Image 1 (cartoon, protein in one colour):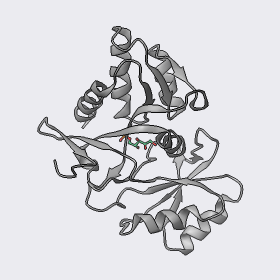
Image 2 (image 1 turned 180 degrees about the horizontal axis):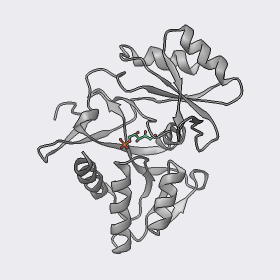
Image 3 (image 1 turned 90 degrees about the horizontal axis):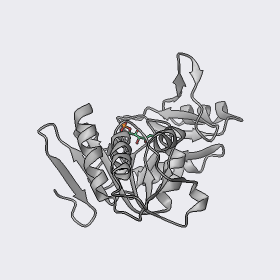
Length: 231
Ligand code: 5RP
């Protein structure tokens, strides 16, 4: 699994060209993308890139590698964003936020001209929902939002870290994970969740990615493109 993540992360870095503004995703697969961008930058191949990060964690990595890092408000667009995902269909419906960075990931995605998702083959599914759907909520009144999800049968749980501590996002919010098992209509669910007061954002990313790169166990990387949803 780790080898597949490394392989696809490094491969995705070949899409980066000098002079680009590059969005850095978050997670254990995006980690390898950032490492390879850092290596190419240090080798002088990408001397004129700028980077924008989707999380404090990825920003730290970028700084360690010496990458020129900008705030989202200091760039007027992003040429290419490479990010991971927790689940995706071949129809470009995905779940993100397993690492808790969904809000910043979606803000960066909104500003990106081209988006590549990278993953191992375990993430490619026919229907979303086995992976718990993360929802970022403001802390104030978060138990009320939790109760509303529970009443709607959405099986919520607060994201925890280090035992019983509530996970806090980079924007200072909580995450409620919805254990839905099946999401037959992601568009309807996305609208329903977004309409709840207290919800900041959800992890349904519908029609964001342009290319999905999937590292298979056999060593191959398959490419699913928006214009051609078969291999
Ligand atoms: C973080 C994310 C990640 O991209 C997603 O969780 C995939 O992570 P990994 O590559 O570690 O499996 O959405 O919020």
